[in-house]
Structures are given as C-alpha cells and as structure tokens.
Image 1 (cartoon, rainbow, N blue to C red):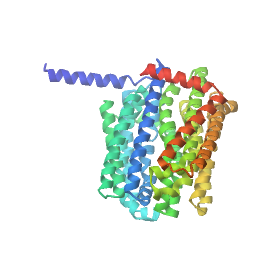
Image 2: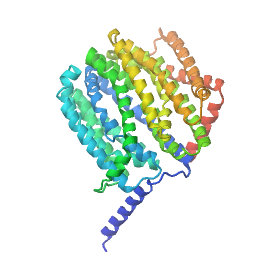
Image 3: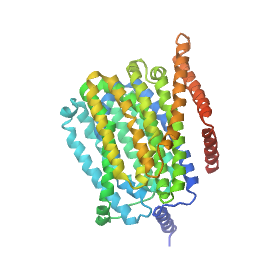
Image 4: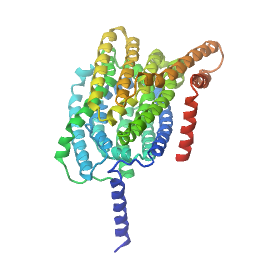
Length: 509
C-alpha cells in the first residue's frame, strides 16, 4: 500500500473523528471551555473592532456619505443572507444534545437550497429597487450582492459544529483573517476610484473567504443524503427560530429602509455609520458572547441551581463591560467623529450620542436570547420580539417627519423594552426583578457618572490648544478611570469577578 494512500486514509479518519466528536454536547470541563471561549471571543472583539474602525476610517476619507448610504440601502435586503439562509436549522443543531451525521447532511442541503432560492429572490427584487428605495443605484448593487446568500449557506453546518465543539480559537482566526482580507480589497479598490463598488467587492470577498476557511478548519463534507422526516420534525422549532430571525431583521432594518427612502442616501450615510459604531457594542461584544453561552447554557438546562449562578455571573459581567462602552460612545462622540471620519461627517455626532445609550441597554440585556433558546422557549421569545418590533416600527413612522435626530431619539427610547424581555427570560429559570436590578443598576449608575465627568473634562479642554485626537485619548482614559472607581465603590463584587475571570483566562491559555 502506497504512502500517499495511507496519508489519505489518515486524513479521512481524522476528519471523521472531528465530526463525530460534535454529535453529543460535552459537559466535561464546561466552565473551563466557556472561559477559554470567552477569552478568544473578547480578544476577537478587540481586534475586529480595531480592524473595522481602522478600515472604516480610511474608507470614510476615500468615499462619500452617499456611497455608504447606497450600500446601507442594499444591506436592507442582503442582510437576509446571514439571517435567513439556514431557516433556524443551525440553532437546532447547536441546542440539541445529540445529533447524527444524517441530520448534519440534511441541514446542509436544506440550507443550500434555501440560500439558492433567496439568491434568486433578491436578484428579482433588485429590478424593483427603483420603486422600493426610490433610487436606481441600489438595484445594480443587489444584482451582485445577492451572491452572498448562496456563499453564506455553505457555512451553516460548519458554524454549528464549531459552536457544538466550542472551538472558539478556530473561529477567532477565521474571523480575523476574513476581516483583514475583506478590508484590504475594499480599501485598494476605493483608492483606485471605484466608489461604492469597492464596498461591494469587500462584501463579496468576505462571503467567499469565510466559508472556505471554515471548510479548511472543520473538515465536514456533506454526503448526498436527505432525511425529510427530521426536517419535518424540526419544522415547528425552525419556524420559531426563523420567526425570531425575521423580527430581528425588521427591527434592525426598518429605520434604514425608511430613512433611505424618505431622507435620501446622504442622510442615511450619516445615520448608518453612527449606527454601525454603536452596533459594534452589541454586534461585536454581546452577540459573540451569546454564541459562547448558548451551547453552554443548553448543556446546563437540567441543572437549575448551576444555571442560575452561571446566568447571573455572565449577565453581571456583560453589563459591566457593555454599559460603559455604550455610554462612553455617547459621551465622546463630539471628539470621536472628527478623528475617525473627518469634518464631512460632523452631522452624525448627535445621532451617535443617542444610539450609544441604546446600544448599552440592548447589549447589556442580550443574554435573554440565549436563555430563550437554551430553555427551548423560542416561541415565547418570538412573541416578545414581535411586540418590540411593532413598537419600533410605529415609533419610527411617527417621528420620521421630524428628522433624523428624532428617529435616533425614539430608537434609543425603544431600548427600554429589552429590559422587559430580559425579565421574562429570567423568569424561565426562577430569577426575578431583584436579579435584574442587581445585574443592571450599578453598571448604569457608574456609566452615568462617567458620562458626566467626561462632559466636565470636555468643557475644561474646549479652549485648550491640544489636538482633537489627544483630547479623545484623554476622554477615554479619564472615562475608564472614573467608571472603574465608581463601579468599585458601588460593589466590590465586580473586581473580584474580573480577577477570577482573568485568572481562569490565563490558566485556560
């Protein structure tokens, strides 16, 4: 037998071992694996945020606000790629304690079929974009960006396997590499004068690179098998997941759609970049941590005492991290915008101030989604998400005639509904209102104190000859110091928990 044949046999055996190890959720050393996953997630958050802000700072100087507005209009449609292409089937693979190979194959082919159908649907919608967005440019972009649906569907099962195995180190490197490659492509083309198409090329590149790296990292290759009975049995749960996905999509895009249609591409460019910065608080911190928590909480769903303790600790740390970032964005917006984007973007300062507060509340309560999913109460989560979406749509419609600032203000106010959703999710594991107060009150109070102190510092530095970038660094350093001191004065529990988390992260790595 040849050495090449033996080598191929060993590779196939290793591939099967990796896939089989994900069939059963593993409770062994769960705490250590959650800490390790959280460590890589937090590191990824920092690096991805720096890379994204850095690339956006460059692109904002090479492109116009209208260019970002056009891509935001197209994103109203293309964001379906990341939300609807698996029909919620990936979450079912993560939540169930035991899955089989034929179920993985079924989800892969079903996801690919759904991705293909949505690709064709978006391609068709692109020809109606002139009526939908009151702008013809968006249609041209959609006819290319629709391909991200198809490419994204190829990675559904691989992403679920990484979550089940809790291999967040691999996920970390895949995300970093994807962002770097995507950003380089967009910046080079923007510098060459391709305008909005440089952003399109970056998005297409990222949608290809991600699945390719996942295939290399998780050697799952689908077999030509399809278990229709499994798909039908999962229909109710997957329908609830998809319902939540639709609600999330509408909630995240109704403001973009209405602003783009009513106020135009330039106004939308200001709003979208302000929202992009504030959404980083939730999208790059809260949402990735949910991916770490979901499989862990699913594994603990029959151990309520341990689950309660884990949820409260995670929720406290999440709020303690996210609240100061969101409130901090609001406080430093007047210095941050000219440093990152330049003077042509000054109109987004008041928008960023309000959306930063909204992101702090929504991000601090984001653990609710993981609780609904892990406790198999997806339908209940759907109903509350639906109510929140209706409230948001009505609020935006009522305030849109009053301008961009009014829309941002009402969106910020709508974030209070997420606190109610968190209370309901806590009730699923016998936690109450007092636990909500314990989680949120101290970080919010410390963040408000930080905001006030930053404003006082800015007033004192207003006539200073210091460059605005130096003022920004002083804002950030002073704000971090004030927040840390106030939080410690309100409760020493946070310092102890951060120390414990740091020790466990160091041991895990």
